[in-house]
Every structure is written in structure tokens, then in C-alpha cells.
Length: 324
Ligand code: SF4
Ligand code: SF4
Image (cartoon, rainbow, N blue to C red; front, side):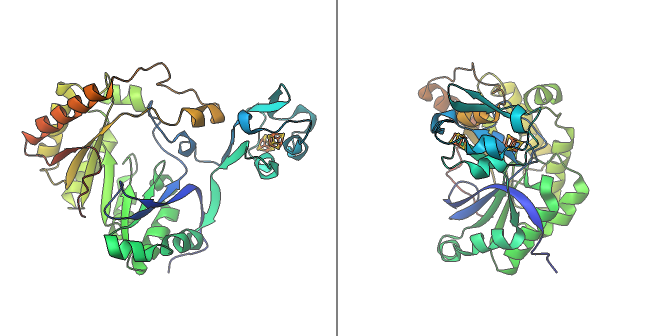
């Protein structure tokens, strides 16, 4: 029996998404990730615990409001940093993440990232769009972060969705114990995963972990013949050399026996900078100047062609969706 009262931290439930799995989908973003990629566009999903993001431009002024300061249990030595009559940031050293300030803020200048949901609440939200799934061949996608950081919560959602006949897709980084994958996979219809770099040292520099466990788990996933989509986020000057893409191709053809529905090469997009600032997390690509669109588009198309010479079903972008 699925425990529908089990709780987990969700940052967002997005309806009508079309890129992460087939058809029209409801995408559930969960908190927590074992990686810390330099280019991550969802920094609010990295840390496992809930936290407050600060948007000073929305603050209506401490003289008119100040509810957050009154709500903060840190009292006179408030964990809220103020300047020019506004809340500017959170002093994470003294903040206990009680979230009282965000609850008290009437202007959305303080946002809670990571709200507690029950399995039932998530599934109820997913069920609202069943007619769209039926018409488009869509379903639910668990994303993040990595949903397997909260794997028991994710498993319960996936199981309950399957009970309702909903197609399930899991986006995971695969930096997880193989035993957990064995437990979760029977409730998953499609797996989407990234290969960010084939060189373990460079992988560690860019993501905080090396790639051995990840590649092992991806190979096991292919061996189990799970429907699998691989994504390569193509980050200019980081992982877009022909040498790295050819090493990826050899891995896909050799270790995975080319058992992939699709390999998608995705362009780098400078997203999420505001969220990094709101969380007080330095953005690793702040000074990076992405090349002009026509240059990166050409590069991605040529890398997709390179993968195809190995017999790999590669596409530029995520819009050409495989069924699975
Ligand atoms: S989350 Fe709690 S402790 Fe942290 S700043 Fe807000 S009210 Fe203060
Ligand atoms: S509660 Fe919100 S709007 Fe009011 S002072 Fe604090 S941050 Fe500004």
C-alpha cells in the first residue's frame, strides 16, 4: 500500500510542459541534488532543505511593513540583512530556515523554496490534467534537483500515478545507489538522464562529483532495457570538444549497446541568475559570455551529426520527442 501521507519538499509543480517526456506533462520539481553543476538553472533545487529567497526590488519598505523582522525568531540580531529601508539578503549563518519571514511577507519579496507536500497532494495536482495526458500521450515527470534524493517520496508518487494509469518519467542524475534504482524503476516508464562530461576529473570540476557511479548506473539502466533518453548539455568551452563527444559516443555504443531512444544535445542558456542572487549562491558562469546563437546552433548541429556517424539517434534540442 502506498503511503499517501508521506511528505516531501517540492519547489514547483508546473503544468502543460512539453519538453521532458512525451505529450503534455505535469512536471514536479523536487528539492535536493547530489551534483552542483556550474551552469545549473535551478539553484533553488540544489539544497535538500527548504530555504528563503530574497527579492529586494519587491520589498515595500521596512517603515511601511517590517512584518518579516517581527516574525524572525532571531529577534534583534535578525537573520535578515537590511539596507536603505529594504530587506536585501539573509544571513544564512544565523537563519534557522524556520520560513516565518516568507510566510509573513505580503509582497513576495521573500519566497519559500521547498514546500512540504503529501504524496496525495502531488497526485491530486497531477490528476487534474488527465484529459490532456490522454489526448497527447503525456503524463507526469519528476524532476528537480534529483527526485531520487527524496526517493521514497518520489517512489510513492510514481506508484500512485501508475495506479491511475498515468505515464511516468523520471529525470535523474544517476549519482545514487544502484539498489535504489532497482526499487524505483518498476514504477518508471521513461528515464531521462544527463552525460555532462566523459572525463572524471573535468566532471568533478564542473559538477562537484566524478562520473564513475553515474556512468555505471546509466549502463545498468540500458542493460535493464529501460526506455532511456540521454541529454548532453552542450556548454561551450567546457564539454563541447569533438574529443569529448566522441568519447560519449563510444560509451553509448560500447557500454550501452546503443540502447537509447534518443540523445539530445541541449544548448547552454544563461538562466537562473536572479535565483542565484536571491539565495546568496555564487553563480559559476557569471562572467561567461556565451557565443552568438548562430555559432552555438551550428556547433550543436555538427555534434549531433558526429554522434549519428556512430549510429546514435542524436538530435539537436529536446523538441523532437521520442515515445517511451
Ligand atoms: S527563515 Fe526564519 S530565521 Fe531565517 S530569516 Fe526568515 S524568519 Fe529569520
Ligand atoms: S515582509 Fe516583505 S515587504 Fe515587508 S519589509 Fe519584509 S521583505 Fe519587505
